[in-house]
Length: 141
Image (tube, rainbow, N blue to C red; front, side, top):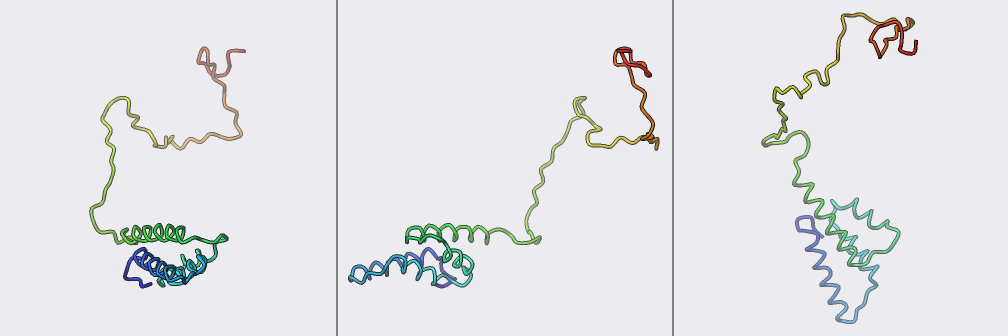
């Protein structure tokens, strides 16, 4: 197979040739046919070729065709995508605008800074009564 033509096109041509062998009573085991087609894949398909060869179960011609079709479509999609940071074309930015309603929390996500007053970690905080709001006691007292 050559790299300049689609693999599926070449695969179908090989199937036609194998069909002619069968018509002339020259039968070949399907596993051998599959192995021959895998061996004929173009050089850029080297990693995929190794993956197919090392599968635990034997592939049929139909399964091989399915794997080749999927791999070829993935390679076409990858070649259509721009590579690296050299992306040319318009950039798209999604932006959300908030209106000045009272529902929008303006301090959302901002840290609250105090006037450099740090709480002493060894000092106990005085309790605040949840009933009356005074410090120094709680309701049960």
